[in-house]
Length: 240
Image (tube, rainbow, N blue to C red; front, top):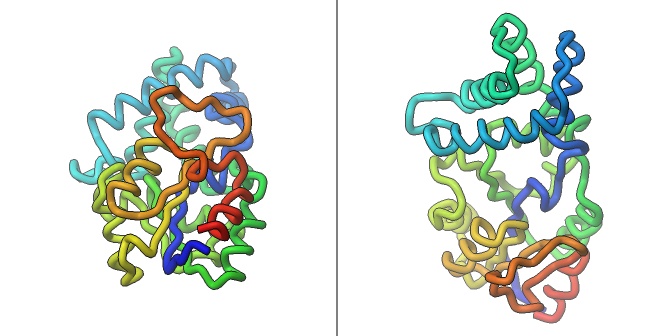
């Protein structure tokens, strides 16, 4: 059995996922304010706005004096502006409502197998924590989705000041748990930010790709490091 004194988890698309696309939720909210904007248009403009903000104001603008709330309000505003909506009198209340909504379980749902594998790990006495490129709302999201109880601590990139794949966020987790890297493992769905970054920090690492999700040809992942279901983790830990 793999001897672990710390198991860290990514959250988005690992334990929790969006119930509908960003474009769909933005479109629905816009309709409540009398605006008709197709979801596919908003999906495209959101991708552009998010990329732009991430490049100009990395890690939620923490290095430029922005709060994550200001950062996200800017992303929402730019998303609608790129979709042709420029009335700030309407966009501000939409942006504020969406910021609030994304802390809610009505936006998020559990990935299949999440509760079962967390309960199993807890029963085995494996201490668990979260390492996520997220903002300050993550604590509330985890609590409202009934996941917070499984984790000793939650590290967000906004809180610690650096984001995956920066190894320092993994080293911060090891320091918090007082654990050597060879006694820790990380589970996440992103090849670079989760799998490779954790391995470079010295942790065991597992890449979660749901059955049917494509595995890019340049991904070098041994079969015993790959999870097509979260429940596969039990066998990986038991086999060591």
